[in-house]
Length: 401
Image (cartoon, rainbow, N blue to C red; front, side, top):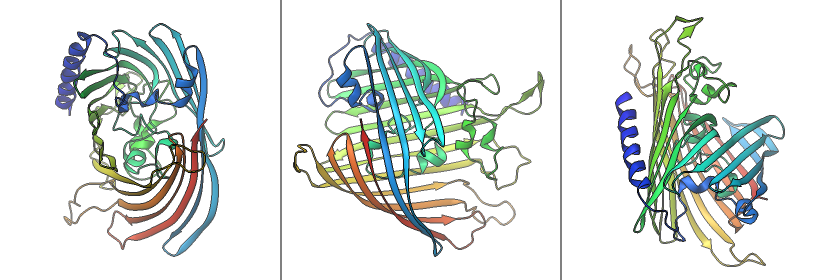
């Protein structure tokens, strides 16, 4: 995995040097790439220069049944996020996001970063609380941009989205005809011991976010994360990303108490359009150095992915909404928490979940979506017991403001 990190670093440095030599060009109309999504928000375009404030709100209803047991009907204000943007000076801008989740159960500062434009769009320095560009979702996760109530499983249960970390690095993009090349490269504190030292009894990367992730590195060795993207204007974008770092506290009071243990996530993402059909998703695989003393309950390899298919069945003005649309949608997804076989029986290790979600969404425009979907899970435990079925209906609304 160290070799992969070095190759990614060399490729990124090469592209960065080539971009730096280019003059800044005006962006074509269809040039929004995944890297741009943090600034592709309505309040920024309305605010122009100076300081602007905005955000989004998301509310949902849920009704689920698992193994014949009803969970009942519930409603929640899942997220209320506030953005603050400021154009500090020429080529310097600031962006932050404060999230209130499940009412006020969780309050998090998701981003607080400064971008310094060094050489146009080709080379920008970024520092602060950032969103590591692992896959496409972690950077582009605002609820009003998605057609489903739930976030993708791979982006919650494997890639620990929304993942915010303190760090710094470079990003940029280059135009070449109808193609746009983009790169991101950052050093961050990195995930922590709770990847395996958690109450869940399994390897679980989201638990590694920890409370000190944006204030303290638990082992003094930064993690590296980055993404390379390629967009064909009028068709879509693909990306390849990496996140790699030492996650365990291998020192205590200056003494070495454990080996350095690395976690590496490799991800590929895609978003394209064929006619009226849009397809997007991401695939990720994780390699985790787990102590030999840990049982096979703790996986050292994980993978997951999702595919969203979206087709507009009504694409015309409704009432006073000139850009409204009704979309037919389906999501297919899977996460395997423990890839491999038991050493004693050679039987496949279970511990995976699959899901399918058909649904409908009504957009009054790009900033507001009303959505409803059915969601069905097939849950396999680690011992291979009969599959557990969980299904239910969800509906909700999400909107920028």
